[in-house]
Image (cartoon, rainbow, N blue to C red; front, side, top):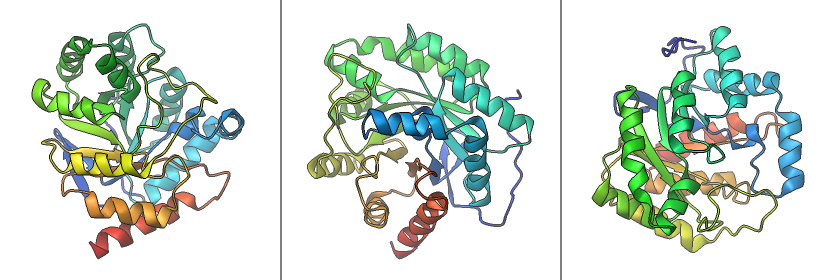
Length: 278
C-alpha cells in the first residue's frame, strides 16, 4: 500500500483545510471509534457497533465521507483498521489516515512500527496512554516516540483527556498537533486502555476547562469527543465547537450509521452552518 493517497475529489464539496506539519487536512475529520466498537455507552452498545461495522460498512462510510468533502479519517493503528484501509485504498479510496497508537501493544514504539508499515499520513500517541504516563510520572517515554514518528516523515502529535497533559507538552515537547478531548470521562491513572462497560462521566465543566486551555496552546488542535459519545445534541455541540475552533484547528466526529443512515451528512451540514455563522 502506497504511503501517498490519490487526491481525487468525488464531488465539488471540499471542506476548508488546515495544516498538520505539511499535511493538508479537512477541518471536519471522520472519527472511527465506532468502527472498533468503542461506544463509551456500555458493553451492549460496543457489541452492536462491532457487529454492524463490517469492512463493507466501514468502506461505505469512507465513500460517504469523500462525497461530503472530508479528506481524512482518524483511526486506530490496529490490524482491523489497517486491513480495512488496505482494501479501501486498493479500490482507489482517497481518505488520508491519521493514526492513533494502540495502548494494548507492548510498547508505544511497537504500535508506531505497525502504523508506519500501514502507510499512515500522520500519527499521534493515544490519549489514555498520555494520561497514564502523566499520572505515573513516566512522560520521558514520549519524546523518543515523537522522534520515531518524525523520522518516518510523518506529522507527530499527542492526544489527552487530562488538560495537564497539554500543559506539560507546551513546556517539554515539540509536536505538530494536539488531540484535545472535551471530556476527561474516565481517569487513566491505573489503566491506559478503555475498559468496556466501566462507568464514565461527561461533565460540562470539563468541556469548558479544555476549550479555554485550547485558546492558549501553540499548536493546531483537533477537537474530539465533542458529542460526549452521543450524549450531546449535535447541533448544540457543533455550534459550541465553532465558537472555540481557532483558524488552524479541526474537529473529529465519529458516527454510528446503524442509528441514522445520513448521520454523517447531517453532522457535516451542521458544521458548515456553524462555521459560517462564526
